Picture 1: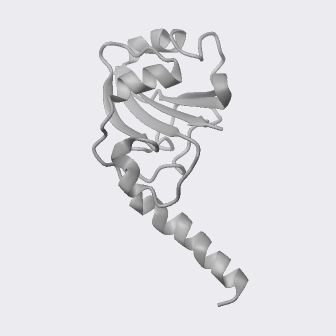
Picture 2: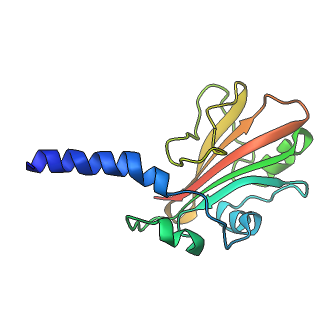
Length: 157
């Protein structure tokens, strides 16, 4: 196998096989507590976690095929639609303008059936730099008038 063929084979493995190996094991962490601490977000009391994945969660070590120095969290929650203003006010997005046309959260980073930020037709989305070289991206599904689904993607850069 030539050098270029080896590189291509490796790239195919990483992009096709690795995401399948990074399934959602049971987390050893409290998703809301961890996310509150690292994302600087206060969640409403009725928050229901739909899905949570943290790359550096000890429960995920058996899924780590390639070590990475950076940590990342994907969190999908549901809350009453009336709580969205309070959630934003108690987050790095307080007072920030969110977009209804550009998605700051994508599905390329996590291969999980619950992680589907491309699904909402109406949404608000934004990104905000955090201290220590971190980034927080948000997408709020506005399709339902009674409840809101919120996608949060935090990562170190």
